[in-house]
Length: 334
Length: 285
Image (cartoon, rainbow over all chains, first blue to last red; front, side):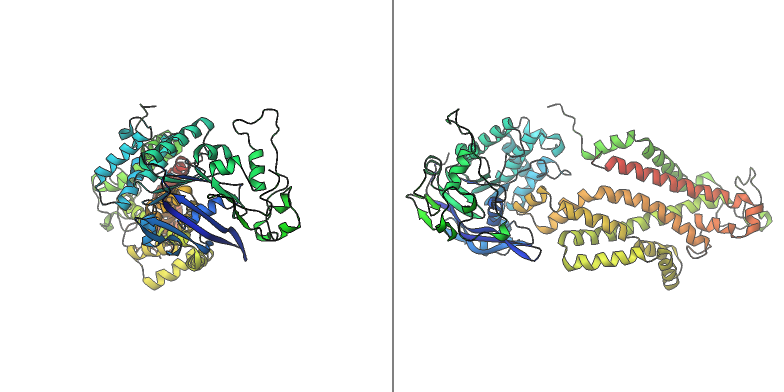
């Protein structure tokens, strides 16, 4: 068991990621900054298309060919040294040595994340063999160990099963095993439970908590589900249109949300302790087209507090501790 | 759940194949004919090349079950020995074409870019240019011969497989498991050949069987025209070559009906097998 610390593991600073769509360039990530600390979980929340996945994929430069980091930096801190991940060439051997070994990732759809033509064991072992100088037998033993820890009965014999013989929840467990087998420092989970049914979701989330406690792994959890974030995360980054609009610890952000978007999000989902007579609110309108962003605050057209000043780029307001929000009206309408 | 059968994908597909009547029929036809070709020396006492001018153009009899041709050679012996070459030519050409198409398709589909654009145009050129004319030109250029024919079939027949593999790569490279491979630091070559390629092979296998049938027909056609395998070597096409003369068609049916039926039967069997295989390997079924 590793305690939650304040030691910096990953720092994302003013990250810009662009995609070229036809002849236009679309800013998917538009100046995102956050920190991940050792042993802690950072939840990144936001609507579809807000850039949360693009941010996560930018960390390891797992972007499609038409996308790339256009500015800012991603720094990974390892044994006192800092490695600028965003400066490494995409698919370079240095970056590949970090992928899966130091920073691992699991994906939304466990059904599609395993190669149907290889056995589960084969795929888990491949990751170890890729990064560590150990034999096939040792790798297999470790894979079986990992699956057992993740609650798969008779793990050793199930290593020879093919993905089609696993259920959805078991596939996601296998994915977590693949991601965790090299004992990475950071696990990026891109909507890890969205494709699973609710009971399995809870199991997988519990499992991720257990893994974090056992290995001291930091987690970046990307989700659109406020309930999951409040349950899992230590810190939260709320994203809207490629920007972090509010950032802070779970307590700070959920108890005293200061950005109107965070407040609107919180009002739109049922959370434990909510007054039963209260109706869930909706956020009017829809997200603007990222290639035709309005000037100033991107949330202004949908915001109840919007005023003339919102046509100007809002400042990042420090609200004590790590808590900060990007809004002209952080003091109002609470 | 725990007693789940240890079925590999191959075993599962084998079970499905066994239950597919079309595939089994095709397989039995191919297997029997291939077996007959392999066991040719046991099935006939005659040498397919032995000329016996004393027994020219004899109708079927107990000594010569399918009669003899214009040089007194035993037609059954020629058919059995000819099967060896015809099947080998068909299969090797199909394998060669599939190999070229698969390798080019891998690179084209995985990396895209200028290589893909150029190769796609080249493959279109091969598809739109009448193949028979291309083959005729190449036969003139490289000369006749079994290996030349296989070579020519392979370099004219890769475009279908190329497009198949390329298209599969385009869709498979977007799959989550490819992304997962990248996220675990696995190299490009390994992703391409170890992770994506095996997932494209089912349609390639199907196309190999269908191509085999096509090339056997093509060989027969070319040899019939006297442009395929040199006439001294028995192949199904060279045997049916005898039917070029009208009097043979009218008076000596044993010289062209047996090879004709043999070719049709084998091609039919291969097509049955290929179609059955397609049903079995189609993941949507």
